Every structure is written in structure tokens, then in C-alpha cells.
Amino acid sequence: MNKLAAIGFAVAVMACSLSLSACDGGLKFDPDQAAYKQFSGERALSYVQAQTDIGVRGAGSEKLKKTQRYLQQVLEQWGWQVQAQVFKNKTPQGEVEFVNLRVRYAGSQPAADLWTRPVAGLVVSHYESKKFSEFEFVGANDPGSSVAVLLEMARVLAQRPEAAARIELVFFDGEEAFVDYSDTDGLYGSRYYAESLSQWSEKTRPQWGLLLDMVGDHDLAIRVPRDSPAPLVEKLFAAAEDAGLRKYFGMGSQRITDDHVPLNKAGVPTLDIIDMEYAYWHTPGDTVDKLSAESLETVGKVTLLMIEKYLLDKSEL
Ligand SMILES: [Zn+2]
Image (tube, rainbow, N blue to C red; front, side, top):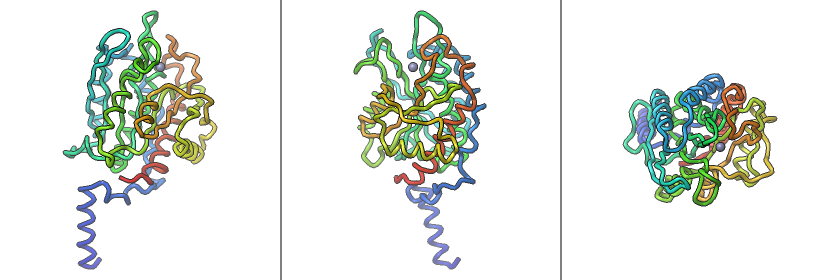
């Protein structure tokens, strides 16, 4: 390297450490370095167990607070930071305080602009369980499975810090309706978050979103809603094909009311990766024994491969 090239290199390295946009080279997809291969379904299943061990985790409950502490502690040990987005909303059962958890990768030294710098995309799940007065509902699949997949994704992404830094994970509160879905019941957390996006500058707005919901059933059949953003569906199916797991993913015939709806309305194209065909949905039978590590691993690996190969490699900041 001659002297001029050496200076140029030093400047590039400095620019890279100051601004993510100068570091695009670091995000080229390299199958040997990719994080998706490290995703463990067994580990993910243990994070489901940890949630159901806490018990019934309804919006506004003490056990949901305990769940928040659990998530924060697990994520921080891998170098992620957690910011609570607290808000109150009227529900059919009176006013409730909700807490969304925003999660960003800080590494060993959180940057001053950690919460305001641009990210390429969002990976989201709700984390509260639906309240039932008639029976105890621990929600292993809904929402335990998708929370667990996000956690395991966070663990393996921390081994690729430059990729982790371009994603925001969000755990939404209040996805479940207290009575029935309407403009004022259900999707409390994602509606609030989507509204808060309007305060982000155009430049910092995420370009895509991936929602995971009910992804742990033994008999896995992901069916994305029929009105999903087409480019994201294509990328999901391409990643599934690459991983040799295409048979688990298909198009659904319906629209679905879920946390992707407010994000899509707010201009962040968001795909709902969901398996609605689950016999124990919203019943006392939604327990860990109905899930499989293989299903969690299938969804975790395909979603991560989609992010690493088809989204981050192309996203601009
Ligand atoms: Zn549900």
C-alpha cells in the first residue's frame, strides 16, 4: 500500500466508524459468515419455556412487568439496549398502561445517537398474552414462540454487529383485543408505535418490517396474508427455497388483523409471517408441548437468511 492509499484507507476506516452508511462493504452477504446458520431451535424453545414459567402475562399485569425484566436482562447480556415506550390508552376495561420495548444493538459502547440513527428495518412481535377470565392462558405459541425467535435472532445477530446495528427489534404490548378488534380495541402497541414513526425524519424511517406471530406449531404452515407487500413475499420465499425449507411457506387466502397493519398504514411495508392454523389458538391448550424446536428453527433461519441475504445486503441508509 502506498502512502496515499494508506491515508485513504485510514480515512475510510474513520468514516466507517462514524457513519454506518460508509460501511456498506461490511454487509455483503457471505454464507460462511452469516448469522442464520447459528440459530438454534432448542435455545428458542427454552425462551418459550421461560415465558410460560412466568405465567399469564396480560397487558398491565405484574407478570408482564416480570416478562419485561426477563427480556431486558437476556438482551443486554448480548449487547442490545432496551428502551421502554410507555403510554396509556382507553380500553373496554378502562385505562391501561402499555409498554412497548424498542431494542437496538449497542455493542460494548452505546453510541449517543443509538435511538435516533437510521435503521434499515424492523423485526417485531407482540409479547403480552391474551387475558381470559374463564381459564388460565399461558400463550406458548401466541406470543411465546415469536418472542423466542426474536430473542434467538438477537443472540446470533450480536455475532454480526454491523448487521445487528441496522435493525430495530420491537416487542409490542396490547396486540390482543380486550373484547373485539376495532379501531379502538387491539393493536394498541403497534398503533402507538406507528404513530410515533411520524416524528422520525424521512431519512431515518425504516424501509421494511417483518412481523412474526404464532410460529412454533409442530405442524408448521406459514401462510402470509393475501394483501402482503409483494417484494417482501418474494424475498421470504426465495430465502425459504435457499434454505431447503420452501414447503413450510405459502400464500394465505385472507387478510389478517395483526400488528403489521398499522405499520403498513404508516408507510413501512411490513410482512406478517404467521401460521394461523393452530388447533390450540386462544385455548388453555396453548402450552409448550404443542411446539417444536424444529418449527422455531425453520422460521428463525429463513427469516434471518431473508434479512441477511435479501434485505440488508440491498438496503440503503
Ligand atoms: Zn392471539
